[in-house]
Amino acid sequence: MSADNLSNQSTANAAEDATYLKVTWRLIPLLLICYIIAYLDRVNVGFAKLQMAGELGFSDAVYGLGAGMFFIGYFFFEVPSNIILHRVGARAWIARIMVTWGVISGGMMFIQTETQFYVMRFLLGIAEAGFFPGIILYLTYWYPAQRRGRIISLFMTGIPLAGVIGGPLSGWIMKSWDQVQGMQGWQWMFLLEAIPAVIFGVIVYFYLDDRISDAKWLSPEERDLLAKRIAEEEQHKTHMPVLEVLRNKRMWVMSAIYFSMAMSLYGVSFWLPTLIKGMGVTDNLSIGLLSSIPWFAGAVAMLVFGRSADRHKERRWHVVIPMLMAATGLTLSVLLASNVYLSFIALILACMGIVSAIPLFWSLPTAFLAGAAAAAGIAAINSIANLAGFLAPYLVGWLKQATQSTDSGMYMLAVVLVIGAAITLTIPAKLVNR
Image (cartoon, rainbow, N blue to C red; front, top):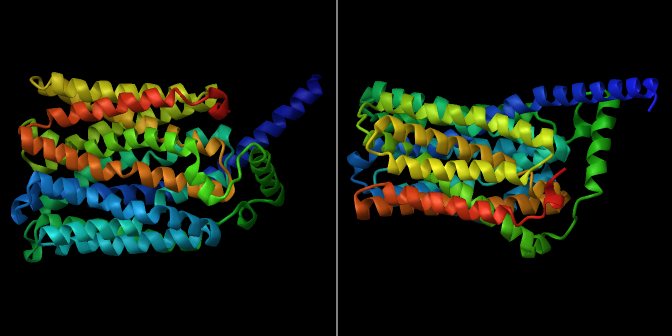
């Protein structure tokens, strides 16, 4: 290639990078904030347990079942929700999801009985169904596969950031607002942390664009470039009817892999405050501050692995290695339990691995699905796998109640991760490495 051609290619690449940077600054900050709010509203029940369980007389098994009921509602409405989003557009549907889950999450402050706890968590799952897979689908409208690993990792830093922000925030609310206006701290926590979902749901409606063609903040040349890149990738993807997607063997393999990740994520998320309390920390604010450390480390690791996956155009091992890191961390957290500091470091390693593997997983199914198949496939994988969100906290709670220790629960989560890593290596590299 001549020097002039090299120069022209370099200029074109720079212009393309600048266009995608413009898209990223437009979309990702808002989506990231929304995901932080979503994840915080989903798992703040872990902090509420520190007060709520004792006040309402909930056992560990009752808490685990209630925390997991979210994912039963989520399971039944995930696929329909994502198909609706694909048809009506992300702007209106994501806004609807956020406003309804905000209202229901705030309503958690009124629960008094086990049945009310189960029902409200179930309704919260119905309300939030479709948010996460909807965003993943939405990003496929804008970014081709070779750029999507880093972008999804950037978006999903919302998980660890929710831990970094939510831990101290939840602990502070529960400590400082306890008995204000005659309400318990956990009640104020549910109310105050629900308000941002409603506010940002309205912002999403007026700010997001459904498609590249709707983006007036891009020049015609920029829109054409983005549309061309997406069209080039669509040629290599599979278009199939929705029912065919649900019968596809790959979907079940992907679901099994993500199930193992989700099980460890929610097992740790719902029980991390309790694990830290078990180390001898009793102050709710201190528990919140300490719980933010593993998630902060996870955010850093997530970005490092995402950038590495895109640079090397390799997906499978970038999923497997963090999964094995997480399994090692969970195991060591038990084996080193006699040393509080080493056990806590092991939990940090576990969180780093868990949150790094999850965003990179989504580069696997989105590498070969398109259109309605992508909408149904992403939602199906997420809904099936997120049944682990029901199973993990319940099993950890049941094992804790049966053995008077969380050790067996951590071992269980580690074994599931190793199995998931082994299944990941059965996926042909040529299918996903782009």
